Amino acid sequence: MINKFQCEDIKIEPIRENAVPIVITPHKGFIPSMAVLFQSIIDNSCEDDFYDIIIIHSVISEDIQERYKELFAGRQNFSLRFFHILKYIVRYSFFQKLVKKGSAYIATYYRLLIPELLYKYDKVIYLDADTIVKTNIALMMEFDISKANLIMPPVFARLAS
Image (cartoon, rainbow, N blue to C red):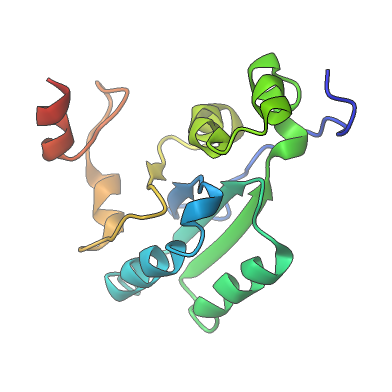
């Protein structure tokens, strides 16, 4: 067990009913590119939809968080929330090993915790930090995924088969 951190519970609650939950788990090298992602979400948003952007991270400073929040200042249909995950993941030996090694790609594995952390959500939209959104992302919430564990763009589905 890593004694450096005391284990904390994090359960991410829905911010409001019918919000569009968008989850991002950025690797530190992609933190700057999130500005492009955020702007593409804003540019393609609809005032009738409420977007709850949830960032699960271990390396984003308070200063950077505040800068990103400024992008959404005055936008009533957006919420940007940051959750520092390091004190949560120490309960898992897998993550303990990655922390001890100083793995640069530990954030890649944070997405595995999304069902556990966001257990009150029926579905969420996960985006990589270097994604560019080209349409209203809220439309993805209309997909029937009742018979699927995962949906992805057709190009990736073709690559996986």
